[in-house]
Image (cartoon, rainbow, N blue to C red):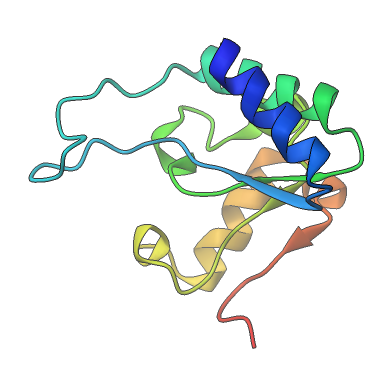
Length: 121
């Protein structure tokens, strides 16, 4: 947790406006293949810590949301206020319609500031 606190404090000093938070996906054949997937509670603590230390920053849920049992709903309730979506490798399995349906199922689409469906130009 100390490393995360230091990272967020360094980020604050740099006045960064948007921070992506990824849930590492242990893909076979990569150096992270044997890592455990972080628990939903741990991801929520990371998001809440980021929100507390970076109150004016967009905290973006990025890669790995699909690994969470609720597609990241609790992370958004813990302080995430944006999502990364579009033409990225870990997002390719979802159509634009499926992404919208996931956001609708989470039930907080009105709270998300910046969600990009499809390719950004």
